Length: 336
Image 1 (tube, rainbow, N blue to C red):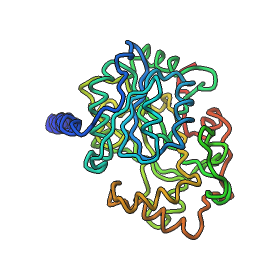
Image 2: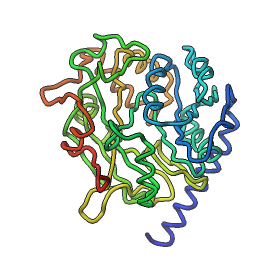
Image 3: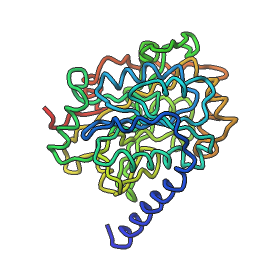
Image 4: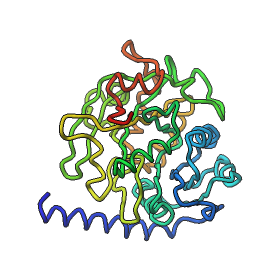
C-alpha cells in the first residue's frame, strides 16, 4: 500500500473512533454488569430492535458455545425484549431512541462499547438472527478456536453469511420463542455466489444466494454483501467501518490465504426468513433506517407479497459444518 493510502486509512479509522465517541452519548444504561467481565472472557456484542421472540434461543446458542458476557444495544424496542435481557445475569444492556441509520447502522454504538469493554478480549459481533458456525463447533467450544487463533497469531476470523429459509411459504410455520430457527428455516443455496476483492480495504466481497436470486435477479450487484469478520481479538485502536464487513486497521480484513491455500473460516447461519419477516420488512420499509434508503427492504416487501417462498430445486438441507466445508462455503484450514 502506498504511503498516502496508508495515511487515508489511518485518518478514516480515527474518524470512526471520533464518531463512536460522539454517538455513545445517546446510549442509556438499562442494566450493566460489566464488572463481572474477567480477563480472557469471550464477549458478544449486538444491536437489536423488537426481537423478543428470538432472544431466548440466541442466548442459549451462544452460552452453549462458550460466550461469557453479552453487551447489547436496544434501539427503542416495544416488545419486551429490553426488559427480558435486563433480567439475564450475563447481559449488560443499553438503550437508545436515536437513529440507527445516523449511527452508521449501529456500528458507532458497538465500536464505542468494544473500545471500552472489549480491549484484549475475543469479541463476537452478530445480530440476533445470526448463528456462528466454525470448524469442529459440534465438539469444541469457541475457546478452542480462539486459543488456536492466539497460538497462530491471528487476530481476526472470517465467516460467510449463509441465508437460511424454509421449504414452502415462510409464513406457513409460526416460530416459537426458544425454538431453534433452523428447525423451520433449514435450507440454503449451496452455490450461486460471486466473490471479488475490495482493493481499498483488502477484504473479500461476497454476494449471491437466495436474496440475489429472488429479490435482485436483474441487478445482482445490489444484493446484500455476505462477507463478514465477526470474531476479532479486539484492541481499542480498532474500528469497524461498514457493519462487520470490514474493519481497520486494514490487515485485519485479510482472513483468507493469498498463496493458494485455505485459511480457516466459518459461516453465519442467517435465520432472517421466518414467519415474522414480512411484518418486519414492512416496518423497516416505513422506518427507512437501513442502507441505501432501505432499497433492500423494498425488494423484500414487493416480492414477498405475492410469493413468500425462497426454496428451489437446487436448495440443500443443512446438516452440519462438515457439509458446508465440502461445499466450499467454509474451511478448517490447517486447524486439526
